[in-house]
Image (cartoon, rainbow over all chains, first blue to last red; front, top):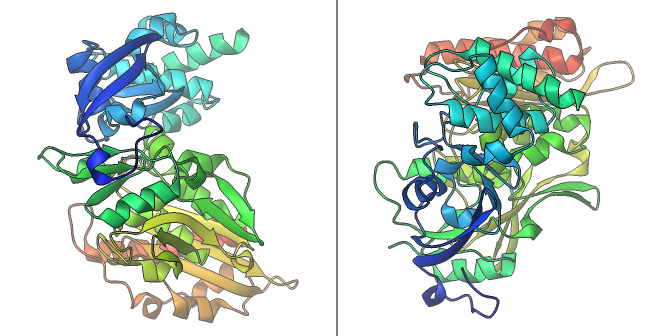
Length: 171
Length: 287
């Protein structure tokens, strides 16, 4: 990334970037190309394979991560865009106050079949609850509509989000 | 190898654009899919760190939406009822994940015939503000989007804001999007309407736009004119006839046939009007 004294001329724009990424509370310094997506960097460079590559163009939600608490699609985010932000992946959910409740609820409610979409579902559900969007089953379905489940585990996913939201509410 | 720059002010961005060759990246939700199967080769000018391009403010009565304002920010903003259509459209852009990063100007610059934001902004008479080292200019939205994936933006220009004039921030508005499902779909047809009524409950001004049924979303001026002066109630919907949709030119594609799109457009324009009138005829789900 540029430093404050770099003039904005074309020659100064970089193709290789020294990126400082904060992922699940840990700092990483990596050298990456400008074109690398956050998803590829998480998986291929940081070895965080929990975040899944489903469609790779923003239609399935399997790659959902949190950046500064907002859920985003890591396949549509360049790693460089996430610099200066705090990234939380499904691996970080175990230490996330809401995320770990959501994980437990997915287990208790059997909110999965093959499990491929589950990391994205769990991260997305965590954000959905924190956004205050888990107010009814209908609201949950709308707020979770960016996460597809080809197995069709939707009823149990909605149940898991509902029960995790109820636990959060009680605390 | 693509280059990457992330300026923090609009001036830095337009200085870079003046050099030529950059592809502007805002939220990135359309940028990456547009690359297709090939690796990214464009030089990327990331405007995501320019705080001055975010947020909604008032300027001399106009409502000014920063170019890089996300759909989520629009959903959450306190805005007059005339913006209800825009908020409804914002809620149906992709998914929450897309809404968190996708930006209003990105939706316009991408210039998809099915851009969710365009009909609602057309009924608000929105203007697009463009900046370059040559100066600043404003264009009505209808003169900005020129065709499928074509806009009036010159290569060295940056869209800095979307501006809604005071006079058009009045009345009630409504939006209907028809898709194969409600979310994460490309629209088959969309309708946005904005209606201002007088003290007798008659339609004083009205704006109607249909999207995804022509290369660029269009206002239905003849229908607007035919509705003015009528009581804003279900009976007014009887005026709607085939002639009002002459300007549309829907296509046949994988999502729907042209005939179906035309029928859908008529139906959702009626529902959106009924909703804006506040009559119960607008209830029901289009998708």
